[in-house]
Image (cartoon, rainbow, N blue to C red; front, side, top):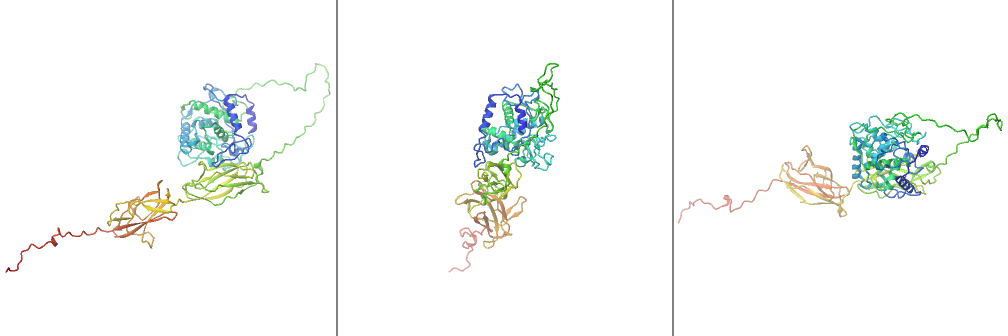
Length: 594
């Protein structure tokens, strides 16, 4: 991409205060020898793209982008180093569905990552630069582009070299990767950054809702605060590592912040002037579908001057030197490029990480450490290691992301941000890979265990009664604690057992009801609330009288028994003063009197 940037830098530059600020912020953000903090957020420039940052570590693979500028009648157009195109080729409005996708993504990020302060106008600015707002809003009712938007193949020929990572599933190319969709994600980045933004159960880079939400999460990784100019610049550069790209996106961001309007889908202008074009304002070169193919005015060749060594002589005067055959050209061998630290990595080693286990909802006490080594086993510093959470799990790194990139230190070690267990229990994998180099990944196994409680207590009576065929008046409610503290979200199992000596499920006596009204004598999947409390459903009794036990248990060993009695009410004891059968007889005596 360096050659492309050089071509653009030769274009007429527009110098303004905003450009100076952007350049200063960029320069300040690229200090060497820094690392990430515990949250995966760079302390200075560990996660900030630099000139040697691999293209594969960006959202787009540093693919070409469109250099259109905001309309010239913008109140205060921001700068770019590219040459502005004509006002008519820029689109001030945003297609309705595309605009809706940006705003919904902003709303979701406000909820999920409020500290990021993502403005929808930033997504709009990137969407404008990457695809001209999905080629002028050419999307269907669900937000999926009509025809795929695919960038040029990243084969190293004028672009970055990124070999195929998706078997051509997204880009149709099984040899090299291409950027795909309205936000131009490369497949290897979409594999971890993809999101389902429209709730259809799929993560499709060609859907503007999915792509906008994925872009929002991508820009908000590392706990960046996008209301801070330095963090904003870092986030934009991580999307596509080019100073021109940064300035172009900032110009559209400023434009959209000053106001925009909704236009019907499919009525937006098509983008022109791609960053790899050889002439400013020319029609885009082949590669991205949907680009404008408008005509280009013919150029008038400028008169050429003879080389200084070929000075003209007077007519008729002889040449001062007879012509000689030119010396054969000497072929200068191309210099062998100096290998980067990444080029020297042969394999990854576990740097001492063992026993990755945490209770649901807790932070793992240990952090994953990986060491990059040469074939000889020497440490390799300044190499970016990507850690990715894999498997069916809701565990994430601190900050809510499932991926983090950290640079190795002088000892060749990269320490991943802390892992946070979700509520889903079971095993999963964290894979460490070298960014920009194909070497086998290193897998770490981690396990999330259930929340536990060591004590269950009843908040109501520990003995309940009911008539045969009736229902118990009181519902069982319990409180779970762990070492005296409230134990929330703890799973409680409730079983009507045969006896204290036989904890098997009873087949008679009291029971719960399922959704169909059928008798159930074991309940699972019930969890305590934030106060550690759990109220069980109503209990019913069949016609079998007796005394029964409801046993409640939790992971961690807590056990509580509730006694249930099913019996007819006792006969009331007669009151002699009111019972005629016990009153004195009123029948006259038949005994003779004296």
